[in-house]
Amino acid sequence: MKRLTEKDKECIGGYTSNGVYDISWQANAFEKLGKLEDIEEEYGVDLIILFQAKGIFVKEQNTDEKEIVFEEVTLDLDNKLLLFKHPRKEIGKGRNISQYGKTWALTREELELSWTQKNY
Image (cartoon, rainbow, N blue to C red; front, side, top):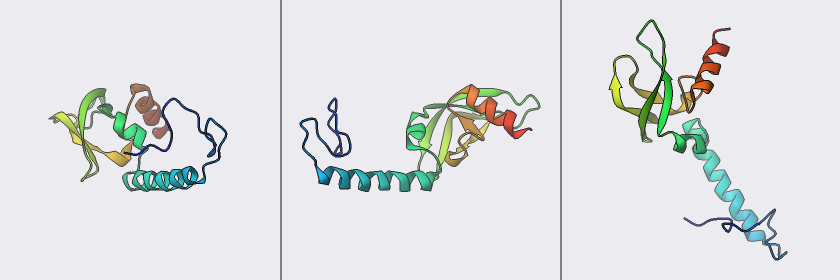
């Protein structure tokens, strides 16, 4: 992977830390950003959020209590799913990646907020 910036060095708007303007940096940055945004559109979620999702909070589907629980997940990018490592009847087998903030979240608070707003 080729970085567009040097780690621990400042490069703002194409200017390097020694004051030289690098036009190729800008073109490369826009090209890479565009590709990343295409992937985000395809999956329906910010890539930073997606790759932080080692464990997620979900609301139980098949019980009256509708508790929010934490589950470990693995990414199934081919099918655009977060699969539970330990699926069970109360939560199902996983969640669709694009349903971030609706059926899954990285924190309990995010999910509680989305469910509160949905119910009003």
